[in-house]
Image (cartoon, rainbow, N blue to C red; front, side):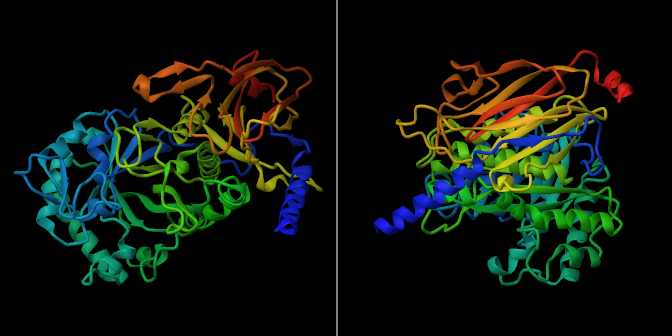
Length: 510
């Protein structure tokens, strides 16, 4: 055992010696070839499991998707007083995701509570048109036409064969029934905009044969009423221990998980659908071994926040249009738990701060574009443990996001937290300073004391923004068109560049 331990420690020491090298970043002052398209303002959004929806009031103006597997199987009962019940037992505190749901009128009244843009999943698996039509009508009546981002028909139809023995599987039959439902609902509900449908909603990028993106498109699902294609994405990761460095905190691994979705984006663009939005409509994480590692609060640690930042920014750079991070009152990786449910206390978790970081990257402008920066140079191996992105507005460099994915676990003995040096070179000549906003936590496995930009959102303050006791936001003057930063292990920073003139004037100088 001691020999094995010595071997492991030797490997760790070798990794640390590589990771200690500086990273040199040279973002272009003007928008480079290969940058993303303009990032939609609602890119960083949420999805809410149908059984949890009544408990999640209070979100800001995001694109919110309500649906999922249990929503696809839900039935409506106009006489039921409760918002949602389950024939299998308690909606909260049971075993796993509650199924066989019955929704009452008050469930749909919840859509009146928020001025959000909604995506609603209409049941499809049981092919009960009456039930589906009634739920669609109640959703539209309560949400309002102007608040509808999209409607979905069904959820993960590529898995229907495993759920219902009589489910439609062949692409031609699936597409025929999909269009039948779509036309039936549109004829009954007046005022729906075109396009209105978010189609497919497959369980993974590749689908499950024969229901795949290519075969469904070939079967003729697309028409002018479809505005977006949705796929679901859950990456297998480890939330604790040294193994998290190889999955959760690993840029190369994060990119590999998104690769099939990026292939889909390119497929759409190369096959006559360049304007069709590609959405990760249900997104989260699973343990590598779900039996040995059941969901827990550890899935919402600070490492999960860093994973969320890097995953979202990379997806953004590759023209994925929106990501709905899935929420549920008994989901470990949820950004917040609005109530105590089972083993989960009411809390605002670290992944929530990742959403704020990403929203800050997008900003208030309507012309944000992003490109991944190379963090490797010949001789070092940072491609796994660091990520960086350049953000552009009005064609000029405006921000730089850096994610230091090196695992750090505070053990009470480290006097100084390890850092990595990032050198920003060739900054625009008009840039005179920068504000460095930090996404910080005590360590990769920390659950509390997280902050972003010196702000916190705590359950004891009902989620309202407060100033952190340790505001680590700093301002730096810039001379010589360069800036050197020290970024803690397990930390992300957003460098907001400050010009002597506005961006348009800077672009004239370029």
